[in-house]
Length: 125
Image (cartoon, rainbow, N blue to C red):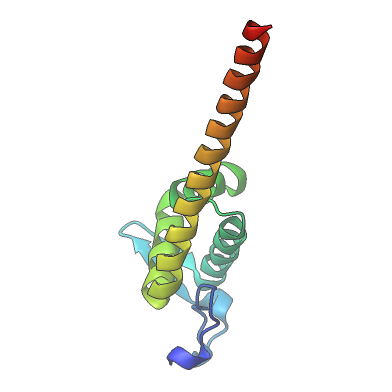
């Protein structure tokens, strides 16, 4: 249901129709292993925290792997499910990431221009 989703944030992947507790339900993410739904929700929470810092998908995968020992395959699984659930959010998020990169590039160029101007002024004296 589209109207139930929060605008501007990934949609929740939890389901209340299950008869068993979420922590005991297992979801397969690769042929040789399984992960609990509660673990997926934890990964989702970590992804959302990273996204609030405007990290890219690659940065999030690397960060969760290093800091929380979460396998990249699990992070990718949760990321893809979040993308499926809220395509509009991810479209706008990717635009915001590009804007962030452009702002950083602009700021770098402004600093470089300032440096050149100062060198030119010192050379004119």
